[in-house]
Each structure stands twice: as C-alpha cells, then as structure tokens.
Length: 247
Image (cartoon, rainbow, N blue to C red; front, side, top):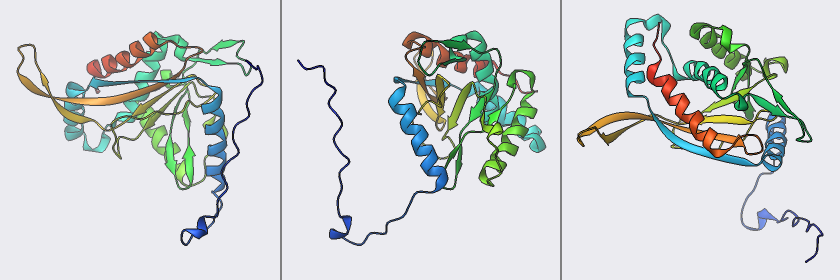
C-alpha cells in the first residue's frame, strides 16, 4: 500500500449559464473572512457534537413571572446561558482551554470571557463579554445588547472579538431542533442553542405532563475533550438553569 497522500479532486468548474440566467457576484468582505476561518476550523479540529434536551419548564416559569412583574427589566435566555457557561467552565476546566498551533501545549485559562455569535448582513461576528465571572446578569445583558448593536452597525473592534474562552451560538429566535456549530478556534468548544419547545413527557406515575425542553448542541475538540465530559457539560447547563433564580 502506498504512503503517498492522494490530493483532493479539483473544484468542479461549470458554465452555469447553459442552464439558465445567472448573476455572478463576489461574497462580501466579512463573509469571505468568515468562510476562510470556518474552513480552517472545520478541517483542522476533530469535531464531535453532542446533542441533548434540557428541561427548562421551571426556569421558563420563573423567567415569565419575572418579566411580568419587571417589564422594564425583562430577562432573556442568552445572558443566563452566559452565566451558566461560567459555572460550567469552573466545574469542567478542560472546556476553558486552548491548544497551541502544533497541538503540543494546552493552555489552561483562569479567566472567563464568553463569546456569542451575532448574525450580521453578509456574515457572522462573535463579540466577547469579558470577565463574566465578575459581572451581574444585568451587566452581562447590557454588554450583549451594546456589542450586538455595534456588530450590526459595523462598529465592532477586533479587541471586542478577542480573548474568548467559550462561544454560544443561539438560533432560538429563528427555530430549529439541533445543529452542529463549528468551534471558534483557538477555543475548544462551542454551544449551539435552538428553540425551546413544549413536549408531553410522562411524570413519575406515568401520566403525561407538558415540559418545556431546550435543545443544546455542544461541539468540542476531541483532542482535548472526551465524549463523557461533553455529556456531563450539557447536563450541567441544564442543572444551572433548573435552579437559577432571578433577582
């Protein structure tokens, strides 16, 4: 058997106009950069994605109750998940690491900077909330709102997208049941979130009860993290939400 590496096939070139009208255009600058980053991350990181549903029935009841009594301070899911990420990284520090480019060194981080994906015209940006372990939920929510506005207005700096430990990518405002988010190198994991849905589940007596389930999809770098810890990590997110109290 030959040890020679077989080169990939060339990209297929085709005259699409023979089938109908076409309009050639170049991708936007942001999309071109994002595409190169995603290709690098996908091809150089051995991705595995763990999918699970966590019970947020009581959490959502508490959140709705808070929003009804505090209409001027409504709480959304993303800031709470950011707080949850800090707690999970503290419990499972292997998720708060980065690998060197050659894979020979693991850098254990002692800080908690959480990124979140923002859908912008022509691409995707990931602002980072710095030092989340020392901030209140309200402070985190305020920074998420401000950074999101800057991202959509093309005012986000590279500094505001640097230093992340862990990223959250939420599609819950759009829909979906699960997806496979690509890790934001040099981080080693990313959490994908889709829309909460109501499901009939049996209670302890076997009677059907309505529960609200939140689908979570955790992609992780298998060079650093094993599957059992990924499963425990997602469970820990659910446990944090189950006991979180708004105040």
